[in-house]
Image 1 (cartoon, rainbow, N blue to C red):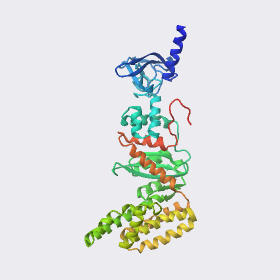
Image 2: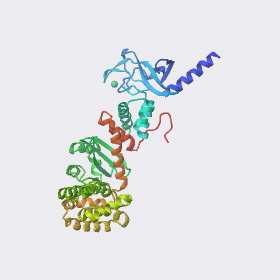
Image 3: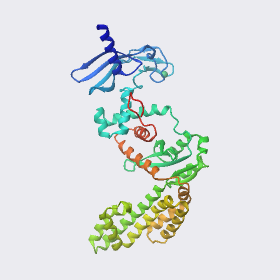
Image 4: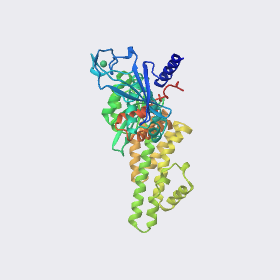
Length: 426
Ligand SMILES: [Zn+2]
């Protein structure tokens, strides 16, 4: 009877630990801190292995003694695995702490715990994640970085790329940038780096390799010169296209410049302070797509048309440029190209400096804009990947490294979302 209980007890402990290569030896609850501790040791074939390369090596010493790893909670209590942490002498890595089968090297959490955190960070809000796992958001960043590094080791994300989008995304109020490469075919983020400019982009092409770079057929990007230069240098066979949402963003910027100019004009004329005030607050009515306007915003637009025809003309120019992409989707490329040419001749003669300048910019990038329309290269899905990336980067604030932010984006949008530990992937 007693022996049978012993066997059952071991079965329960094994289930708690959930690692085949670990042998549970004891378990207790620490009254004061209300944590469960399971003492474990690695099975003999998992012992005396280098923490970095897992090669079998001779023992060096006992290291810093017993160590604990945070594991998945049990019954609402924190659970720790506790074990010796001896050091070994590796032929390649010198004296290092021995590997343990339940955790990654140098980690204070088990693999199962890391995986749960990775799942939560990609599926739940920041505060929910931090509350459920009772860990600082900063620690989440470190966990994601090592989880992602290992997940990435077995995957070649750059295999089979043909049509890609390159984007620079600013964060920390435009002081820092990340370079993001998206696969147009799978809609996945395939590569990301901290910083922007020629060097980070060249390191993408280095990772891709010359042979695969030559196989790229289409590359979409914004109008940045440095992207055009590096693409010409490294992927000469690819057609360069301009992402529509960048073109629309230019038009929105031009409209905003004209709105500010209109406000300044009204302020300096000082005949009607109400006019200046209302212009100042017209930003949303001018920015939104007409189909999304509220009644109040529609009234505001009508008011602008009556009181500042020039600003209203600027609004119509912005909408006109946006409509070209709708025409491309509804009526085909040929109609869209005709509409683009009509828009250009209208904008050049509009006498609104911001839009005359925009017309010049559109003309400079005419071929790339055309390619996007004709090849149907860019569409809402790419923009939505881009928007999602921005939101995730913003969530990654509070992580202490750019690597952690990149890990979060790759886990969310790299096409390999984490699963919960000990469950079959859905
Ligand atoms: Zn080693």
